[in-house]
Every structure is written in C-alpha cells, then in structure tokens.
View 1 (cartoon, helix red, strand yellow):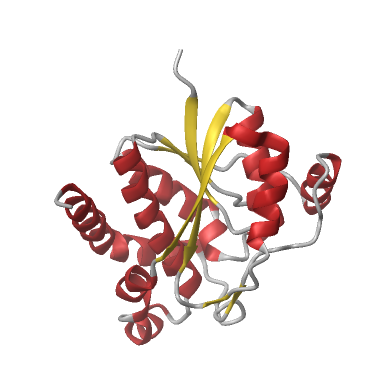
View 2 (cartoon, one colour):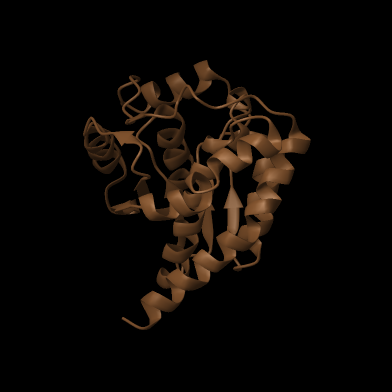
Length: 219
C-alpha cells in the first residue's frame, strides 16, 4: 500500500510545527512548504525547527521547500490594496497573503502528485481573518476544485496544548517563525466582509494557479 503524503504550510512557529507532528503521527509523510511573500524579516530560525522535526521523524519528513512568492502576493493583495480598503472598510492584507500561499501550494501539489494539504490554523487565532471558519471553508472548497483535501489538524487545541505538545515531543517551545512587516496592520472584520473579499479574489487565484501549472508543464 502506498504511503499517505501531505504538504504542510510551515512557518516554523508553534502551530504549524505541531501540525507537522500530528500529520506524521496519523501516518503521513510530509513536504514542508515555507513561503516568503516579500514581507518577511527572516531570522533563519526555521532551520532550527526543521532540524528538530527531522531528528524526531527522520524519513517521514521528505523535504523543506522554500520559495519566494512576492509576485503572487503582489498580484492578489497588494495591487488592489487601496481599492480593497476603500471597498470593505478594513485591511484584509493577511487574508490575501495566505491566499498567495495557497495558490503556490496548489501548484506544488499538482506538480508532485500530492492530494492533501494541512496547516496550523487554530480557533484561538481567529482574530486573524485567514484563520476564521469562513476563510477555512472557502479555502477547503478551493482546494477541492483541484482534487486536494485541506486539513486543519490542530484547530481545536488551545495555546497550552500546542506549547506542551511540542515540549512533550522534545522540541523547543519558543516561536521560531519569521517576522512579518504586516503583522500589526490587519483589521478585525466580520465574516460577511471576509467572505466577500475572498470571493472577489477567486478568479485571480484560479488564473494564477493555471498560469503556474502551465509554466511547469512547459519547462
């Protein structure tokens, strides 16, 4: 029987790191995907987390794949930033940022025959629009269009459960993710506004996925 495989959006932070543990312990081999949107101040600490995970799970971690996706982020969220703020009355830049990651993730999965994606989204972080249920449901359906299953394996865990989940597995409990320049510029928005924003980005996301797949096919 072939091994189950999943891609995981991996920041090096506590949440995505425990999501890696959870998926491996459920029988998956994992590809860790780390995307730089051009708005990150790198601290290079993600390599420490990767080394910790690799030491524990060995060959279950296939690789750490790093890529700059600033072009996708610009096209999805930055080009229309002023217009979007005027239209919706809030900044949903973080939602647009995560969409760019999902677009590139779909391209990666289709090119590598991967049919499952997971991340470290949690209910306790739902002040961030991209981790609201309305966003996760939109993204889940978007992945389904490409025959990919989208999972949030630690969604219902609280901060202490996540922190000590890593500690119990022998890992540092310090956050090791990069710093984002937009981390304090987002707005807390109603679900209805978030849903409208996401729907407005659907077509550009689809075009960017298709462009990425066509590029890889013609290489």
